[in-house]
Length: 105
Image 1: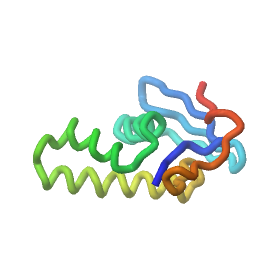
Image 2 (image 1 turned 180 degrees about the vertical axis):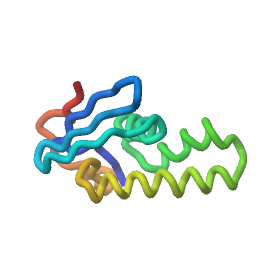
Image 3 (image 1 turned 30 degrees about the horizontal axis):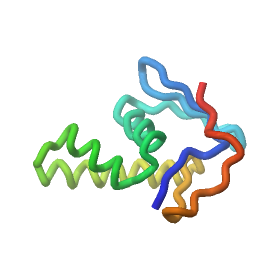
Image 4 (image 1 turned 60 degrees about the vertical axis):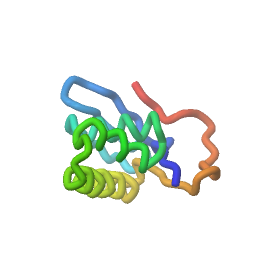
């Protein structure tokens, strides 16, 4: 499965995290530092497993308990972003057609 930020999302990094605005729903959110790191990895990698692997290497090393916890937290975060239409998940190789990249200020 491939992840990408919805075309309707405008986002900006700040010292405190990332601010998101969904232009269609009017939803505004601020992500803390941890969630902002997941968001940035989704934006750059576009793959759930790659995000989990990168965060696990960074924070868990070879600790399987911490890796399992990171997997659960990343899955929960990504699922909540998909439910809010902030992130879209598509079958690998069938990414939605995008006229322009997700807005970032």
